[in-house]
Length: 259
View 1: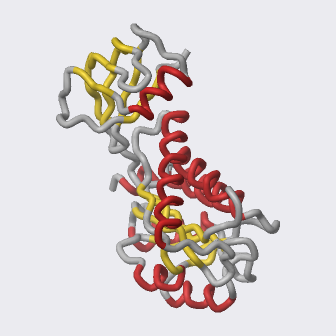
View 2: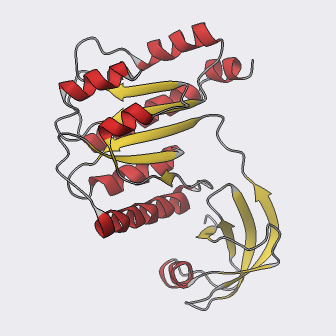
């Protein structure tokens, strides 16, 4: 049986004991049925983990005795997903899959074809919900790093302001879209290394408009094909992140990154 996992942010890096908050305590004790003596891995979402023993199974304030601390090694690359907001609960699923794949940041976007518009308290509540979805996924898959969930932004403004990326990609159904492998190979040939920071934009139902695609290209985004079939937005996001992560973990990418 795998170890239990719980999220916490200790006041010091080397605590002797950890007390979980009410939500984490309830999830650990009431939902997962951890019992005193069980091993629990506490993590802070920034790469630090504390290997602990559950010593008190109070459902509102579980206590963990720390055995030792370890620091997880981050991925050698960072992927940001810029996701145009889909309808219904699909964004929750996208956040979970992005966390499992190891995305460093998720930026929810309102595009021209977005049918979901979030403002004020509604936007804040949604971000909290997505943060919860990311935390649940991190516990399930053992990812010690939580992605940053950025505030909801207008797609056009985000395209214009996106800076500091080695590569900026946008999923495209338009003729002339390039293959990811070809774009990564071209980057390595010019730069002599694999990219370390990559931004992926994925559209909503109906994709980005031609005007948005044109703007993206003018802002330095490379249109990338995800194959001949029209994918649902949650499938497109998972596919895009998966193939990019796979390519960036390839032996060739590791060699060029280490040069």
